[in-house]
Image 1 (cartoon, rainbow, N blue to C red):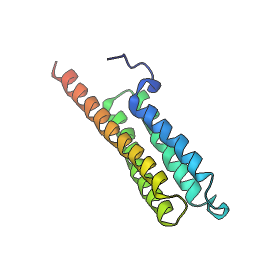
Image 2 (tube, helix red, strand yellow):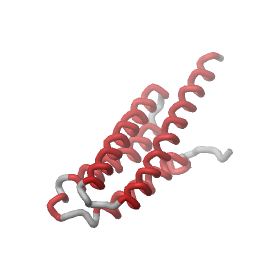
Image 3 (cartoon, rainbow, N blue to C red):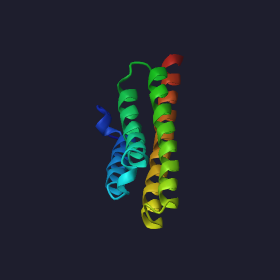
Image 4 (cartoon, rainbow, N blue to C red):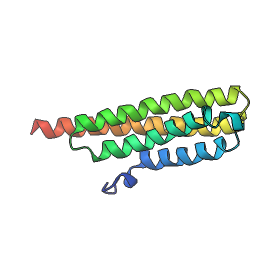
Length: 128
C-alpha cells in the first residue's frame, strides 16, 4: 500500500473530488432560477465533503480529524437528498441520478472505512 503523505493521496478524497466535478457539470444545466437555490446548495454540499476531508486530514489529533470526517459525511447525506430532489423536479434524468448516486455511495463507503481505520490506528497507538 502506498504511503499517504497529503490529502491528495486519499482515495476517498479523490472520489469526493470527482463528485464535486460531476455536481458542477450537472448543475450547470439547471434552470436559471435555481442558481441561488438548489445549484448553490448542491455545489456547497459537494465542496464541503472534500473540504472537510482535507481539514480533517491536517488535524493533529484523531479526535479532531474524526469531527471533520463526520462533517464530510453529513454534507454527503445532504447532497444525496438534493440529488434526489433535482431528479424529482426534472432537472436531471434517471441516468445522471443513478451515476452520481453511485458515486455518492462509493464516497460514503470509503469515508466510513477511512474513519474506522483512523479510529483503529488511534486505539493501537494508545495501547503501547
